[in-house]
Image 1: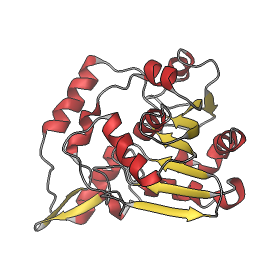
Image 2: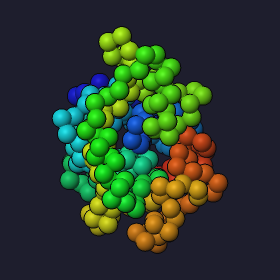
Image 3: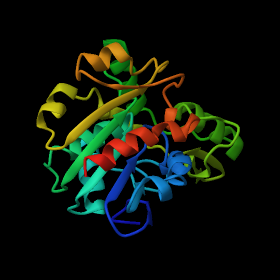
Length: 247
């Protein structure tokens, strides 16, 4: 634990790659890509569970800045490259601003939701205000946690849940839903690093047309959806190479 943040580290001395998961998930979603980094990344890697997720401690309040500040404490001054999915992608872009004392050389956000309807924001706020539901069995809780994170239910990550009295609940702090809509134009303007936006070709949350309104050349991952990094980790090696080339 790094000041309440559960962090896995590995690799070899050299450039550091930080991998940040999406809302509801844990750092375990990067296990497939992590296993490919020995041949794809010339240095070390850092994979945290974001605050309020997995084995990391909850925060009294959630914002992209609050999440970035906690990651910054664990990562240190850098330099680093950051690859983040969905919520983790926004946190990565927030770190790339330099506001949190980390020198980010390059950042890539995969599957960041760009377009938000008022009803979606209202639903997220309502979820943030609800207490955590307690399930009778670990299997029920795991199934629900995987669905919330959009992950396969066949082989769920045990870090997604936590014991609660005689039952089980999602490890995800419901308050994390309160992060709201990211100011992507503002984050892109503030970035002091080379930034890449990417998404799966069939990702309904991060559509190519929305990304092209922000950057001229987003990377579209053919045949993949929102959790491209889970469904086909090797497909993200091209993004890792971009980060490596920017070093």
